Image (tube, rainbow, N blue to C red; front, side, top):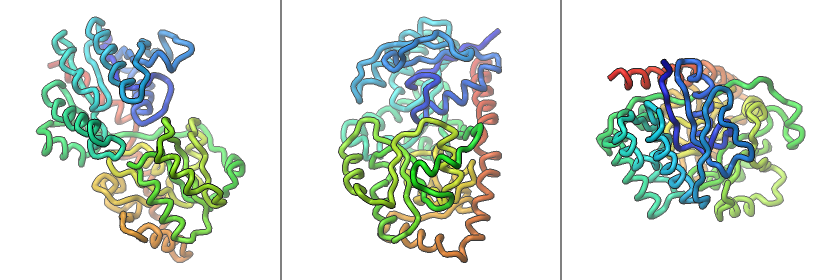
Length: 373
């Protein structure tokens, strides 16, 4: 007797763009072996071929109003209506923006679960109305969902204190690559251990402008490699491109979709620099830990939690020269052994704390308990 779980809120499967898609792909690969029948709702516009099944996962393609702000919500609404009339036992939403849809399935006797992600209402990307909307959604989760999932202890605390919503903490993992491609670095004009790495979308939330300024101020001879793209080429991304135009030391790779290639960049960097400010458990940080990268992170309660309070990384602040001074410090030859010690602890941390197999088991358990009730 298979338990039927429908997933709403991602662009589709098996494509991987961002955090949610990665989460669902990694979960789907594991849950389908656990007496669970998965159905994933996909954005029809993104798929030329529309197979109804891939790797044992059922796929449903629905249209959406393909405008930046409406795409997700219109798609989630249609998906919710479709799911209400389906045989699904549990409807699992990702992204707190989908919270308003959670009440419908319950009218149809379905169980509902939501993974809420980060502090969306604080992110610069969502000024004004967007920010109010996310805050409104966060207030709804305790009423509309049987289970709420937060991906960090700190996020659990915020949802409990600010929104009186109780949640289960289930973190996030990193997939290991099939192989590495060190020879690929030459294509980008970089060498092993001779570059800093930044991975993330070109949006203000990730403090890319701060990191570039600090890097330039540090006078470092190592290159700065920035992997990521702004999907909707915004003014921020353009200003960044202008700022670094013609600089031989900064390499913009654009979006890199190939998992093995991405892991190669993490594995061979001198250090990975993390500037994300508003997320919980961040996927790029876990990928860096998994590859034993040396991590320099903007200090937030979330990065403190992920880096085990400084055991698996070092922190800088947003104050002027904080990061620049740190770069000078870590490039000093006498610091090499410290860096090596920090590096080695990263992989262990992932095995214990951010392991996809354990994570899939936790979701499996949560779903099964929910149906037993």
